[in-house]
Image 1 (tube, helix red, strand yellow):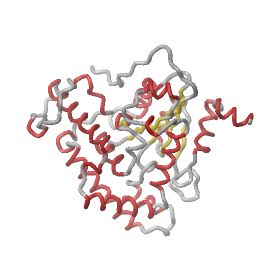
Image 2: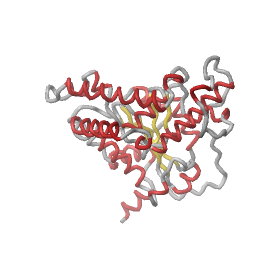
Image 3: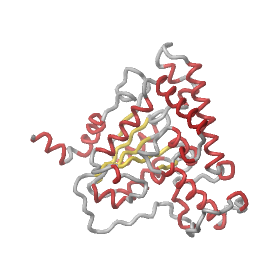
Image 4: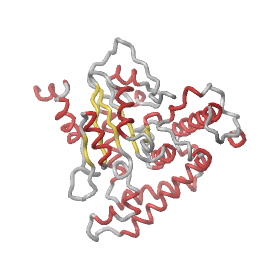
Length: 317
């Protein structure tokens, strides 16, 4: 049986100057809106003030973009039935082969799901990670980029700034202890993050992995959530993903906070004894976007962990 825990080793001398916070986000109806647009739930909470059909049409456009990115760039037609919980899950099968001239379309990837095919899937995961780090502007033509940008703007306008507000909060979580923009990158290891005392965003979604990565790119989350910090709980459940995240990033000084809209992540956070913030679509709720602030998030964290040293200094000042 393959150990799916991300291979991370920490030295004994952890140089942690201040608590690192790991923010664990749900995706759908938390950082992005899609299902609630398609089924009318989002428009419904506005009691007739939102055009339900417009929301549905926006959602269908997003679905088309997501499927296009998955199929054209992320091998989804071939690997759809081989979901893994994170991109590094098969790293032990990857021999590091140069993929620049690799012919994915003729390498014979298929059943049975044996070691040879796991290696081929690991190659695809590595290729997906590389494309993710480059961004969609490297693979989409100008016409598609315009359609994508227009759809993002239309969605943000229809939802009162939900997408841009959520993105701004994710930027704030990283900026709290970040010393420079170059410090945040997909290459940063958990040990280097802890040494710098930098916060980090992790995504745990109930959707399958490849479409979730496509969503991150299309909804412009790739600059605040790196590919290796995206987890799919589709088959393993959110509690298992949370356990892997704790093992990967955990130390006495690391704080965890879960933000989402579902009962599963709420129950998993409770089991882990982590603070949980429930996102609410209703326009009168402060726990939505726009609405949720770093101060509100920090107050939930402080209830469980107590004020950090930086907060204590603010109070003394």
